[in-house]
Length: 574
Image (cartoon, rainbow, N blue to C red):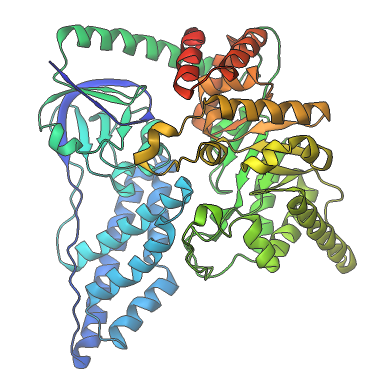
């Protein structure tokens, strides 16, 4: 009987082909010192290796630049990390002053930055550690004189099986040779998943023991929709795969037709679609077909640097996005970082329970100048477009009132200084903590809008760390407790005539979008790759029927029961 293995569905689609094992270079570095008289020679060796690594990256970048400019930006980012002046100074200091061997200095210096980033509870931030590891390993390989290992595949197209893929590996993937990707680590926000989706390569990630369980050359059927891999599928399973593949390809082609169209349900209910953005530098082509930015994650301005971004730098970044979207709304979330996100530019003490610690707005209250600098930049940028401001990790009205007081103070300062700034702008809250969700009736009186972060709300309501595979079965976004809270928030804000948006993963999932509309949500924000499919789903959805289905799910006893019911009820849309 064919073995069926499960992982995380990271890029939808189906593929059938032989397994190809790929193992990226993994350095083995031992602690070692050099005599003081040899320190200069070690620096020279480091310099030569650094130049070699830069040349490799430049060759890869040039090879990709014309074919796929977006993927080539990964390599440009790696060049920036490699040539970072602060990191370079630290490595030289360890060699010259501490007499570290060059490879040990590189390992220690990069390691400090990697540990700060990879401890984050935010998947998007955590995955940035992969870039640092990738650059570090390339530099060490050059130090040891080991030639680059290209992702050379067999002559026939294959299913790529690996423990993990480096960002530079995924950037150089050949769509004609890679049928699908299976890795032992990773999730839907890692580089492998993002690149796989952009290239329409099915991917199943986080499959523990994949290299051992999926032998080289073994026939694999990869289901990137359900997150499953079948080893040596039967003829019946192959026929079912072909049927599902044809259906999927048909839906994909059909979904593409909906990208430029407004999002409207079958019974005429309009739904606003926004983008989740993490950077001002890379605006996807889908930006032309959405109603604005539902979530601009400003914390990415603070990554991979040893200094805090100043007011002028933030002003430039925010202005770029506002101008790009013109009259459409841009919802900017103030920085959502904290004790669990050890960033180089903030000296934050470690916390035993960072999920419940000093983070986001709490951190900003402890260090008010951080928030004031950001608020001043926001107000100044607000004259360039349609800006909304949103505060994360709000636990009660005292948080909102204090933050609004700081915003008003910044506005008065700018007016006294004679600097152009926006007048009254809409101020909203992220609803991700159960306390403010329960008090949504009172919050709706003082906030201009709300945005529900379903990822965090789900993990806080169900006490299930979404980063912990051991409790994955408890993390259920369609649990009746979560659905009831979302319905409560939508109802309370609706009674005050104020909008509610969902910007978590649930909003970009076709089933999630259908359920959310049934719960009364009319604003969804998502990653660019989800826009067309969600628009298609909404076009087939009757909002009245969705409301009945959502009410039925809210009345059910278990998360599993509710999800099974919803998947069956909306099967024709998925």
